Amino acid sequence: MSYVPHMSILPILIHPDPRLKKVAEPIEAVTDKLRKLADDMLETMYDAPGIGLAANQIGVLQRIIVLDCVKEEGEEPRPLVMMNPEVIAESDDVGVYDEGCLSIPEQYAEVERPAVVTVRWLGLDGQTHEEEFDGLWATCVQHEIDHLDGKLFIDYLRPLKRQMITRKMQKLKRELARG
Image (tube, rainbow, N blue to C red; front, side, top):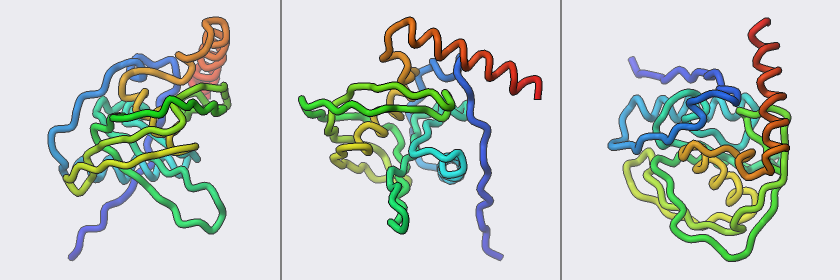
């Protein structure tokens, strides 16, 4: 009898939550438990729907992110799982994207980041990978790596705008708690 992993959709933490501000721990080795976590994170991200998810966002303080920025209808999805991802090079050119976050639902703001980044990470195959990303992929991978460092996209905003969004999220959490 072959084992077929059952994927789960996991609850996504909503800001403010102290776990979203913590720095995630490096991953020492690729295990079946981590492969299952990666599958669950991809399932959760696609279900949300989103283009990226960091382990912090589901309350797991380990350096693992998933992303897939393919949005065109009929285009082949390209799910990426990155453990211990790090930006090893970035362009001087910057890009500005209207960013959102699954932990900060329905709130968007323009964030400026390097337009092109080279990222090195550990793959599920246990190998080190390196790739250059631009456009939406570059924005997304930097956004998710920020999560692993306890940083949210609203941390790039002016204090007043950040407080306004935080208050909206506190209100949303109260409403969700009431059911």
